[in-house]
Image 1: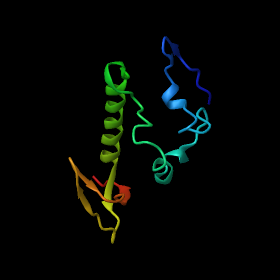
Image 2: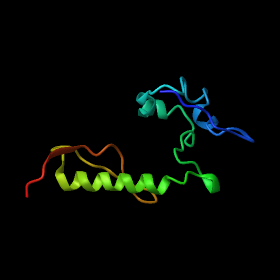
Image 3: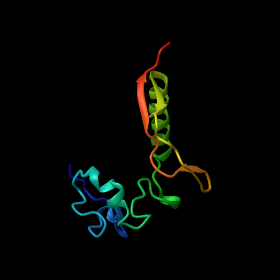
Image 4: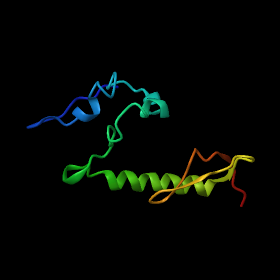
Length: 111
């Protein structure tokens, strides 16, 4: 997959995404670049998929609504249960988080 950069008066709009310092092979599909050990080596704001401020993506709300719909369909069709023996450690921040991933088992929902 190749991306064609859109050029404006300040240069490429893809510049933060395609910066080789943080994204080796920026036009390649490499999902491993979002693994925790890879993320730890980049600044926190190196990846902002929808941008920030007044020039942020107009499709943000649509993308988030789509994600909510997908989640609603998954919750309707499947039952999510915690993996037996996996303990969830809560962490207090601005909102409540889990210290590690929350492991779940997925099964069919019975009516």
